[in-house]
Length: 402
Image 1: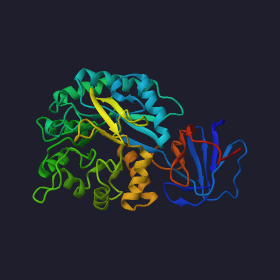
Image 2 (image 1 turned 90 degrees about the horizontal axis):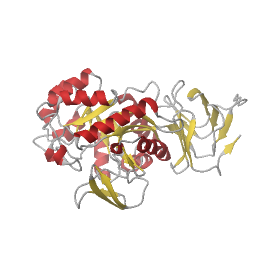
Image 3 (image 1 turned 60 degrees about the horizontal axis):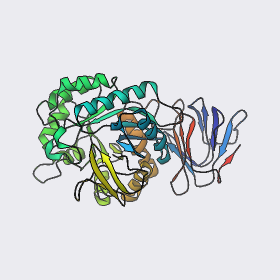
Image 4 (image 1 turned 180 degrees about the vertical axis):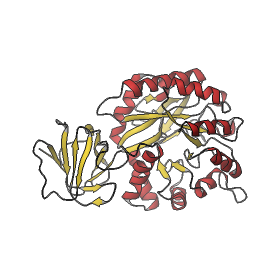
């Protein structure tokens, strides 16, 4: 289906707005913004508007925001090309993602620098209408612990270095929004201090920090946990570790990969009950094999084998995921029994608030970007709209379009 107008009304279905859930009603869009949300279609005037009427059982939710994604559909942030980011931005709406952070990986420092220059230029000059928006960059590594490298190439890992980070920040055109690091390493506290002063999110993972070291990092400005449970100190009865700090400390927003592979469904439920939808965020940590067939793919200069939805460097090392955001969204409801509203909070609202873009993203409300996802009766993505432009439509058979 083609949206032929900058003026659009989507009516019927269940609308999950910022304030309430409407069993019927409409969302009005003008020039890429949401201009009206109503619980009644009784006095709806659609003159001059393209009208889409949803079947019973369909839903309208906010566009999802992925804070942690390396690649998709054969492309990766580290490819350092405009084409790669175009592929990511045009593919992600298929799974309900309307904005994301382009995420790097530990690599040769010159490779990282090149990818940051490319991403910064892309964000400034090459974003396309009808694609997911690149909101910034997530720098994952190289300032991590070699003992918790996971799929990050050990030979390129470095201690936190504020001076080096300043170079990276400048090369990115100041688009680095989130940094995953091991704050217990030499230079860690200084870098967290710097990030706090620059309003850049500092996040912990690929770290061997003890609970007391996490608390020290929180005092310096740590506010985020990258992919909870994966490559970090676990919950121990004599030291709560990073996992325990995620459970206990309200200062920390917490990512989780809800694919049932990185974290078992039961442990996802444990984490949800402890952290709640107030602080938990859904991410994919996906690599270039997502939306492609099983096979061998590159990640950070290493070959990753993808079989039956599991991406492995070797028999025991997970190498990112091929998780789609819509599946994370459905899985969190299945694993925990949480409501749609709760899943929306974790996939849309919390990431927007953490990135400080909730004034324009993360919920359905007047004045915000018209980033919307239409779900069918099975909660599968039927259509995705990015800033009022159609980005993906599965088909027209069930939709009444005027």
